[in-house]
Image 1 (cartoon, rainbow, N blue to C red):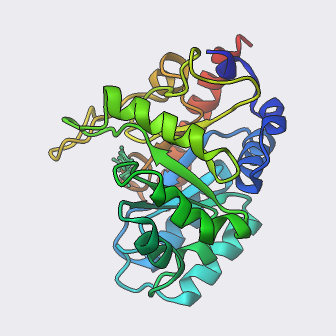
Image 2 (cartoon, rainbow, N blue to C red; image 1 turned 90 degrees about the vertical axis):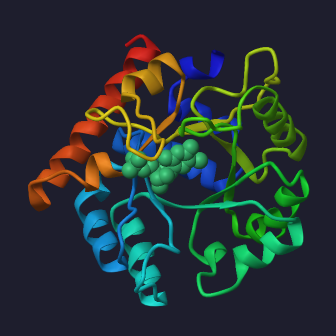
Length: 271
Ligand code: 5IU
């Protein structure tokens, strides 16, 4: 695939969305294609994980509705850390409703996601109105959107024609707001991508140990994701924050995944 042979730094020129540009700049600057998913019960614990892994990552992924102690002060500190430690914030909200509803869910409520999350994502199942509804809120703020092209879980229905139509939907929407996909493979196939187009492919379901969990999650190694499947960003949750051994072990594990992800990227470039 042509895009996978171009360094992150040289792909900046294909983008106009400020979040896409920022991610690629951070990846190049910090030599990391690792994102950490902080799916812990409290905002307090999440911040502890972020302080430990922040230096090793290009992105921190949240599910803000998991935190039982969610407050605006938590967001303030997360945003402060994102600047201090140089990463972007991805709220993995997986919007899935009609345009009008998602624009409210994105801007309002307790979480006010658009006010702090650089990046969020959406299912394509409602049709292109979901992109328009989110863009209305997020695009003026310079935010970015990923569509869910595929999922890592066993038995996912987001395969084949669904994935292809999701790609087509993104392409039709233009790249001012939609900057890429959550997927297990490159969905921007060589025969479909147009001159000058570039999409960021981010893959969850990454682990160096276990092959999965008891609820359908399936893990691949960073090398399988980046070299074999062409992912640009690898997303790791329990493999990093769930490691035994306390604070230093979490730091070390994040660094191990960063090195594995970067090594795979260099292999892909033929370096
Ligand atoms: N996540 C997936 N698979 C997907 C999508 C999102 O695992 O296809 I879209 C999320 C769920 C969780 C994180 O927040 O990524 C992976 O966590 P673990 O590495 O702990 O399995």
